[in-house]
Image 1 (cartoon, rainbow, N blue to C red):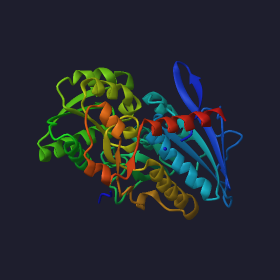
Image 2 (cartoon, helix red, strand yellow; image 1 turned 30 degrees about the horizontal axis):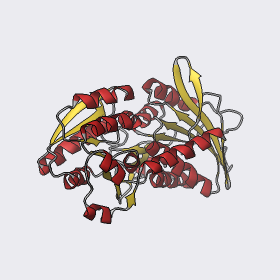
Image 3 (spheres, one colour; image 1 turned 180 degrees about the vertical axis):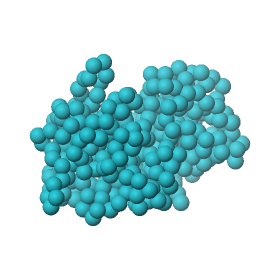
Image 4 (spheres, rainbow, N blue to C red; image 1 turned 90 degrees about the vertical axis):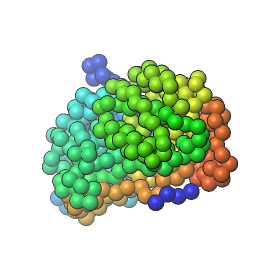
Amino acid sequence: MKLGSLGIPTEARTGNRTVLRAGATLAVAALALTACGNGGNEGEGGSGNDAGSESYSIGVSQYVTHPSLDAARTGFEKKLEESGLDISLDVQNAQGDQSTANTIAGTFASADHDLILAIATPSAQTAAQAVTDTPILFTAVTDPPSANLVESNEAPGGNVTGTSDANPVLEQLTLLKEIDPDVKRVGIVYSSGETNSEIQVQWAKEAAEELDLEIVESTVSNSSEVQQAANSLSDVDAFYVPTDNAVVSALESLIGVARDRQIPVVPAEGDSVARGGVATYGIQYEKLGEQTADMAIRILTEDADPASMPVETYAEPELYVNPDAAEALGVEIPQSILDEADHVVSADDAEATEDAEGEGDSE
């Protein structure tokens, strides 16, 4: 039904913070992931793009590990591999720590990269503040203008542009009411430090007015607080989960609260449906990453200017449903919705993704 996924880097420690670090090299049709021990600086295996050469260096800053962001990075890497270009990737992961994201951005500012990819709003914001003379692409950013990343989606105006994962909140909450017409109060747990989440909560409030719903909020500062925040929303009939990095990282704790109360959970993206949500209209993050890679190729090989490259979106969200999760949460998905589903998923799909990621780590 149409409307209008993952390598994990190897672990290294800096002080009392855990940072995932890896380097990757793409050459013609080969992609080899290797450990990067230089903390993000360009090492022996990477070099900038000298005039007239056909090799390029890209710094990748990912805010946190979870399936959607991992999938966006996988799509980006996959499309670059298919391009046949000689590209080295310096992949850094802040693991949800803002100070680490700042450090990564500062390191990239002094590195000799030809382009920077920032995955998720916090990483994009830190990269944009630190790096002013290198093209920056973002992906998995909900509202780039509100995050002060671009002047407008149509005309970014600086060295930053990319792809947005803006989700159809009205359609998602409408889907929730179709699944459980008795829902009146919808709880949203979100991170007070994520601009993208604040925007989605505002969108949810606007949609709720049309649907005769009430939005009840609880904020967190990190993923360890998600379960407590969900428990604090004791009088809600359902949960809506925005594409909030902290909450999605700890989604299972919120799902557990909903299971105890036998109320539905509608997340904002399909990977979270596989992890225990009931249903949603969501985008395919791997394809969003591929779309971002197409933009990167134009910048690297055609001298495209980010200032005049409009922000792109994934235009056709798809319907994901999880009948097993619905049963566990005490609700039944109407047959009409099941018949229209683009993807019928289960916990087995999430486990398969985790297994694939684990295999990638061991190589």
